[in-house]
Length: 245
Ligand SMILES: Nc1ncnc2c1ncn2[C@@H]1O[C@H](COP(=O)(O)OP(=O)(O)OP(=O)(O)O)[C@@H](O)[C@H]1O
Picture 1 (cartoon, rainbow, N blue to C red):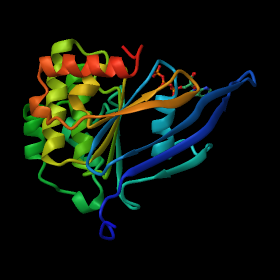
Picture 2 (picture 1 turned 180 degrees about the vertical axis):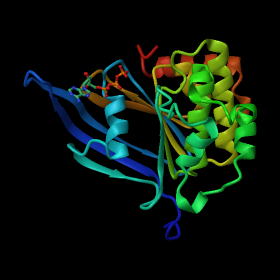
Picture 3 (picture 1 turned 45 degrees about the horizontal axis):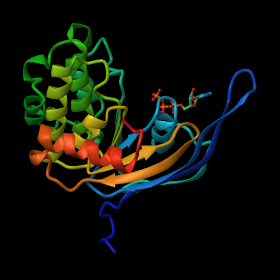
Picture 4 (picture 1 turned 90 degrees about the horizontal axis):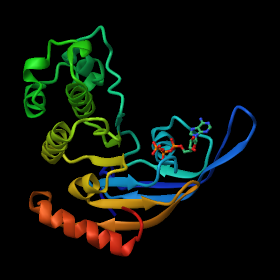
């Protein structure tokens, strides 16, 4: 047993999640999605469009309580931070104000220099969101999430709609900032290459209504995951789960 108060795994079991559309049609979104994410690990959910990935994150976030099953968070009283495709920054506040507004009282006045520096935002602290590219706004959203020192970090396709060079840079920054303070992270993506680059555990979901198709664990250190390694990992995954590519 871990000592009391130590982070445990994120433990998720969602069954029979159904939506009723505005025309009264019942839409089965999730059949059975059950998995754990070990403490301090980076876990990725990957699956076809519309299979129920964002719904899974919303249930974990507590935004949707209409489901059967359970969600056990890494710590009972820990903070959850979420980064969505939309950076969701307040346009009338500077980057730094946006980050500081999210801080809990215990972290008010925290020294954010190292975080802004790591994310390449040192010169952007006084800028307004309207002055930022999408890539920079996503960095600001990541800064805001990490600054709160969350017990759980949820990431919903944080690199989508970025040009490849910007997405690569942002993935490297995420690894850097996350490695400095590993927190249990759960990311949703469509991008298997991104998943093998970042994850300790990849959870493959079926078409809607989602079920877990399989779980793939990676123990190669991130620093050793070069292009050759990634190609081999993707081939191994395709052999085990045909059709995921
Ligand atoms: N509030 C809602 N009311 C009705 N249907 C919904 C609602 N939210 C989601 N859905 C439907 O549930 C299914 C799962 O949606 P969800 O957004 O979780 O999928 P996803 O895997 O994240 O999709 P994508 O990969 O395209 O982002 C979809 O068919 C979606 O249209």
